[in-house]
Amino acid sequence: QVQLVESGGGLVQPGGSLRLSCAASGSIVSINAMGWYRQAPGKQRELVAAIISGGSINYTDSVKGRFTISRDNAKNTVYLQMNSLKPEDTAVYYCNAHIRATYYTSKNYWGQGTQVTVSS
Image 1: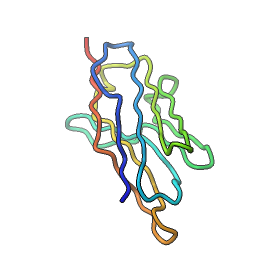
Image 2 (image 1 turned 45 degrees about the vertical axis):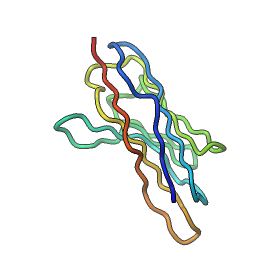
Image 3 (image 1 turned 90 degrees about the horizontal axis):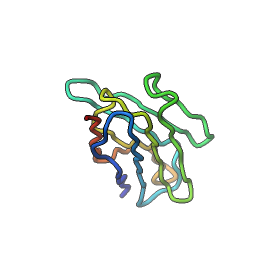
């Protein structure tokens, strides 16, 4: 059984910083990609940033220059460093990973979500 456990959310003032972490555990053969999505109230879930096994990284335009995604392959962990936070970054942030749990199967897994609130 594969699990994604997130940490690091919270309340921060505009202009502040937070660092999210997501650790994958369980039966893992390999991890193809890891990333972060977010969902604000009344809005669809959107991709924030993703990093694939070859090192390619994608960011949504609204976070470019402010957020940095990184990955520790030895720890099966992905991080999201969020700087210069804005009120519009307020959302539940979800970790996502495409994991090969056996040599014959791979699929997407989701974390439980962590709340990020940017407010003065």
